[in-house]
Length: 124
Image (tube, rainbow, N blue to C red; front, side):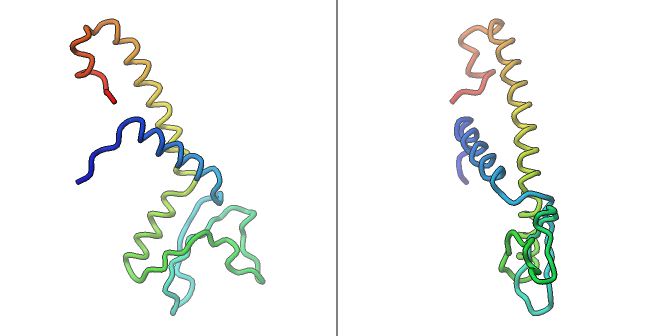
């Protein structure tokens, strides 16, 4: 079992995810297996600028899982659930909650004597 990341490490992960999501293909992501015989599940976006045309059938594909069966499907569902819009929404909610915790900690800090700070507040 691995150790839980520190708050600073989580902040770094959140920043990395925010940057990656802001650069990724937009739109709601969905998945499908295009035709019998293919091994891939395709991850697609419904963003208008990525809509497929007759001559460019897979223009809206943003990823493939390259896995067979339920593992490929589970991976595709996970990738779709981790679309840029969803990641950014979760990170925005995290920012709000983090600000609330910081405000509450600041309000409580004068009421707590120093020996108990490590018990009540997260440390390093």
